[in-house]
Amino acid sequence: MDKKLSKYSKEELIDYVLTLEKALQQKEHQLSINLKWAGNLGQWKWLYAENKVFFNELKASTIGYEAEEIGQIGFEFFTSKLHPDDYDRVMDNMRQHLIGKTDAYEVEYRIKHRDGYYLWYYDRGVITKRDNDGTPLELEGIVFNITESKKLEEQLTKYAEQDTLTNALNRRMLFKELEHQMHMNEYLDKPFSLLMFDVDRFKTINDTYGHLVGDEVLIETINLINQTKRDADITFRYGGDEFFLVLPNTRQEDALNLVSRIQDIFKKTPISSIGYVVLSMGVSQYKPEETIDQLINRVDQMMYQSKQK
Image (cartoon, rainbow, N blue to C red; front, side, top):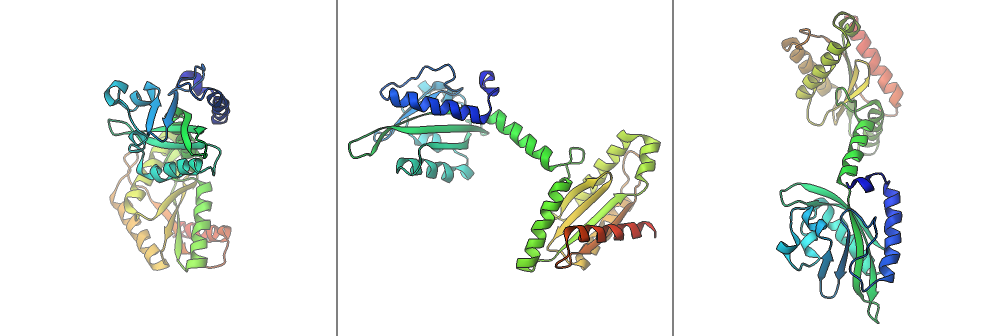
């Protein structure tokens, strides 16, 4: 994103765009609006009846095309490069504005670069000219490259949902998933089980080898768990060396089979930093009408009992 624009929030950019719309409406016959903050990809104009699009050259060059190379284009030049998951949403957004159901065309979308990767754009435009019957003749707008801000947004989402050490989902996401599984059980009669595990003598490992080695033990443990679990099973870090696996559509017998597989793998596979580790595990199928806390406490007690054996 342009350095001058990166300091602004999305809300401030939208305020800028609203101001630009007023300028566009006042200058409907002028193709270029010279405002210092007019956007890092500039503005565009679409002659609707003729299907001719005029645009800042940067909008094309950013996705790998030169204006001289592509010549005069229509609306479909850009829409044909939309990400498949965004296409219907973008086209519907434009249709809603053209028939007067929205005050502006406003949308975020991914557009394909010539080299095959996608960039994120924020695009907003308005009808600036109509014929005597009210049919749209011209639309004008402004577009921003928001790829960097989207990357930051994805990072922040990841930090909010994932444990940064092991990449397992975090405690907040565990509770969210358990609520979902309980809902599936109540309304669709789908069973699920919960498995809890920790690394035996983990405090001793930290005290003996140091916390960096302790971190490596957790990372390798989770990597091994993820290689052993089924695709549908979801890994969560609860805190310290305590982890959970949510096992969707799983009854007690199948959950116990998974426990056996995990135990066998850890007996055969050393952790590179210290050698073999032992996991204590507790597992149980969810009982209808019990709370999340009751389920977690019950599985926690099972894990504790396994340590005593």
